[in-house]
Picture 1 (cartoon, rainbow, N blue to C red):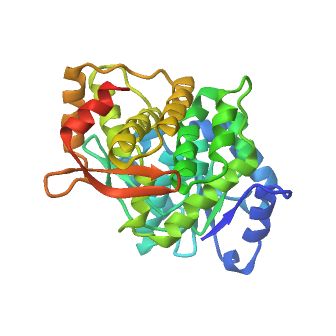
Picture 2 (picture 1 turned 30 degrees about the vertical axis):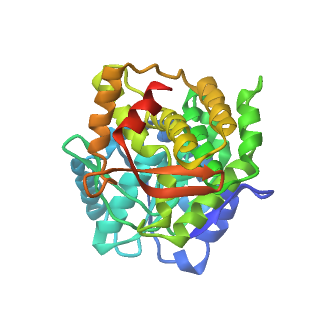
Picture 3 (picture 1 turned 90 degrees about the vertical axis):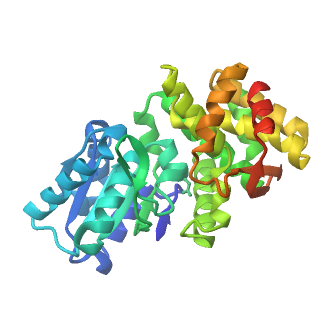
Amino acid sequence: MKIILPSSTAPLRRLSRMLKGKAYSEARFFIILDENTYQHCLAPLVAQVEPLQMSELIEVPAGEAGKEPAIAAQVWESLCESGADRHSVIVNLGGGCVSDLGGFVAAAFKRGVRHINIPTTLVGMADAAIGGKTALNIGGFKNQAGFFHQPDIVCIDPEFLQTLPPDELTDGVFEMLKTFLIAGSDLYGPLCDSMLGVNPTLPPDMIAACAEIKNAVVKADPYDLGTRHILNFGHTFGHAIEAFSLQQGTPLSHGRAVGIGMAAALALSVGKLGLNAAIAERYREVAARLTPMPHYSLADSENILRFMRQDKKNAAGEIRCVLLKEPGAPVIDLAIDENEIRQALLRL
Ligand code: GLY
């Protein structure tokens, strides 16, 4: 897997050069995109990446609606009708939902064809496009079917972020905070400072550093058998908070729910692993700037606990979480007592 990061040469120009190389001489390109990336991202892409100018386009529904088995089947039919073969290359132009679907389609088509991820959202650039996880939703449950299928190339061009409403960046910022915290990166502090400032900014170098950390974690454990679990920091709480918010009729985006989940996980880390309380407090301050922090009642916390009991990372009837001993020192698969979870939720 090659990763093209922002630097002095435009990432899309570098992608163009790669696609003119021998490895792609027999390739036909199929771009999977949604209505948003069709409208805002396709023109700049093909203007800079000449080999993609003759690509065939396959439009899919935006968001989670695109991650349905019926949509994957439609894409395979389009590929067959267009005579796609084993040299064909799927180019995913979009956020995490497009790369989850397009990666899945590529993993199964003709028993596996190459794919290229061109993330257009911050979550995609910082996390979803990197690592080879592909997924479909089944029966209303997220990511129930999937393959590990590494993209051939991930091309990160922060210029695409200009096409997004600023509010959309928040989910990605939480993902970056998580990555910098678990890795103990020097960039965690500057990112917090920037988010607490009057004009928050996201320098391309910071996005590139986050993508590199994610890539290194994946390389060490591509099939998510152990150390890659550190990327789930905040997610056991986050998934349950997301499901609870949906049940309450006030849905939170996945990224915001994980952002709130990280505040709970950090509070728990103080009591359980001796994390410096100032780190948890500072994070809470930043998170509260990015999204309103909820105040849960005892009944709410019971409800959230019910969702946490269903988390697929649990084992032996215990709720398992990733907590943080200190920045750069996450502890995976830690069994957590339900009372500790209640306390962390009530203290949010
Ligand atoms: N997004 C978590 C992972 O790639 O493992």
